[in-house]
Image 1 (tube, rainbow, N blue to C red):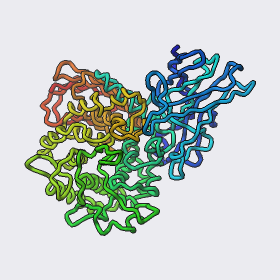
Image 2 (cartoon, one colour):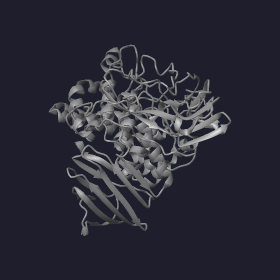
Image 3 (spheres, rainbow, N blue to C red):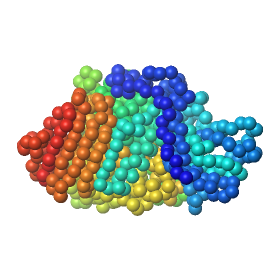
Image 4 (cartoon, one colour):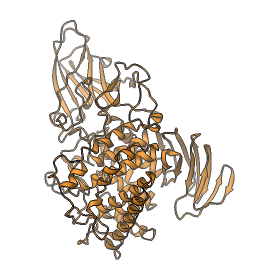
Length: 624
């Protein structure tokens, strides 16, 4: 029996755009909270509860049933008991199905729970009291509001020892942060890409249940790199900015140990500024943010190193560490070699040196961002200093860490090993000179998907920055075991922590840092990004690769951008783009293209490869 999935019950609405423009980290109730909406006074977060019915319900024996809710969600189960003959029910919940039954030993951090429900005479409705996980409820974890029941991610439910149970008797009480399912959309001529986008879009929604960006269900702790990737994808699928802002504030007092994770904080500030136009966080945390750039570790050559004598207790205190005996450690990618039962890790054989190319690529980008922030705050002298540091770091990376014979960057000073990470990060961060991009891109492509689901964010950014859209599309639509499709094939409905359990045996099935395509499709395949803060002006630079057609809806603080691509043959592309009334735009043609353009019915000459767009409908016919 197949039932229609029930979506939102009543949800409390508020204007996120107004909240972001006014510098408010949370919205305001327009109605009194109901049973299906929660306000957390502690986390200052909005939540919604969706009552979801099974998409399929199967009777597996005389007294056993299997329910499939379609997708995993952080939830508990509501059960209606029709038959008073039932004395007790055995209930199993899990994320993974194996041979038609819930896997009772799913491995890693994949969730499963079994409990016995004693039926009370004359009582018909029950909400399961699940057992809390010991690790993700430690004091360091993000606590859920007291009004929440214990939640665990599950898709499947088995009930045994029961009579008279029907599909309508089971409800998945799924908890989410406030999320608009209609805020974004994407379709294309590639069905695998469509499935990957939906997997990643839903992954962002499913993991909002804490009111902060957390690593997943194993720890429920915010980590800076996880949060940045989550933020990028969240902004691409919903115009909701308060979770990111709340998480940024958290990191100022709760840093984590990886060197590069500290260098992700400025990136989060930058995206918040560009997508909302809000300067409140910059003004509030500017002085502390300078420490997060690790500028204290700079050497004479303009590069930074955690081997610096300045990597001491004073720096750790400035970074926000309570225990100042802690020290940062370069991470590059995760897991690292040998970390989990001899698994090789995801660093492509990276050779760790005191001066690390990946670390310094992030550092360079931090200096660029801080120069802009300093100028924004009227600190012109500091802006010039950050600009100078950025220029010196860029020059040193290109002069000291580039192998001219092989056309790639090496892992660090003192090694000739050139991992994919050592080349993809300079490319992603805008360090590679235009004349080197072809060679560096060739090296990157030769390595394949030699990075984790986290590293894939920067690998794909690097490929699009090098105009290698076909290869990027191939990676996003691959079907081997290092692909997003492999997550779907494995049975997960939320992106996994790793490509496959064999690459990280303790991985979970609900890690938003694996959802990179949700933002890559928007920001790079379609090339839709804010050009001016708060989307006052948008840049659209499509690189659709081999796609024959595509549509997209992109939420912004000023309203929704909609766009359509239709191709007639290999050279002619027709774009229809609708911009909100309070937004202008720039359409940019892929670098190096010789093109003829008809814009709104008139042939135009390209100026610097760009066309100025106006609010409303813009139609471009491009022959290249």
